[in-house]
Length: 214
Image (cartoon, rainbow, N blue to C red):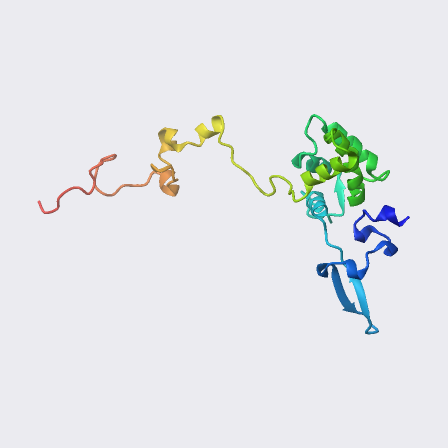
C-alpha cells in the first residue's frame, strides 16, 4: 500500500509514508519548539524543478493565483512553451482532451498530481519510440527549469510598413521639421512657428557669420 505513495512529493503523502528524518537533507528540515518546550520536527520538502515550473505556469497571467492549481489555458501554454505540444505527435486537441480527462469532474483546474497524470497520458504520444518510463522522463526534462515565454516583454515590430512609417529620415513637409538630423524630436520648437528676432530673413543659413569688426 505504501509503495504507491513513494513516487509522490513528500507533502502529498500520508504521514506514515514520510521519509525518516535521517534520510532528509539539512535544507529539508526545520526544528522548532512546541508550546511545551519539546522538540518537534516539521518536514518541509524541497520543491522539485518540475513543481517549480508547474507553479510558474499556474500563476502566469493571474496575480491572484496560488500556484497550486492550473487552468486549461495555462496548461496548454506550458505544453506549447516547453515543447510537449509539437503540433504533430501532440496537438492542441490532444492537450485539451487529456486536461479534461485528468481533472476532477466539475473542476476547472488541475493540481500537481493531476498534472503528473496528464504527462503520463501525453508522453507516449510525444515519444512513441521510448518506453513509458523513458518517455515520461523525457517529457519532464522538457518542462524542468522552464519559464513562461515572453513574461513581461513587449517587443516593437520593425517589419513591413511599420519600419517605413517610423523612419524619420523619410518624413517630408511639416512632419520633417519636428525632428533633427539624428531623428530626435525637437519638442515644442518642432511643433510651433516661433518668431525669429535675429534680423535675418527667413531660411537664411549665414546667421552669425557677419564679421562685426567691419
